[in-house]
Length: 145
Image (cartoon, rainbow, N blue to C red; front, side, top):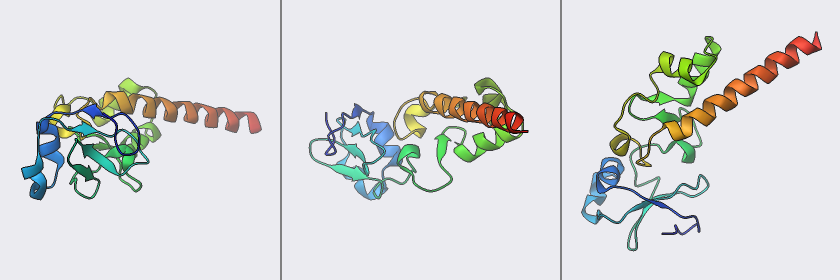
């Protein structure tokens, strides 16, 4: 099903929506909600009748969030900032960041993550991008001297 922004959403479980939706909207819950993955769209959940935006959802949705801290792993409450700090402290791989922060080790994503999906789909690329940038920055520094 497409969101009002035109992007295809993915189906989420009722328990996922219920866990993140402000309680005043619980009476509108159904088994037919979708999650909007568009970072530029304020819609988080939608079905054929109701639309819930970031204002009606009590949980920060990491890629729709403009400010900090931005959550990456909802089960272990790890933010982008925690990952950046782990890399500053010497983590050199996704596995080392996982070990230092605990990211990706919760196993309750269907409930804790507003997308209803495993956070590993998102944080691995984020970490790899940071590590790649770090490597390029280190190379630039060594080559400029």
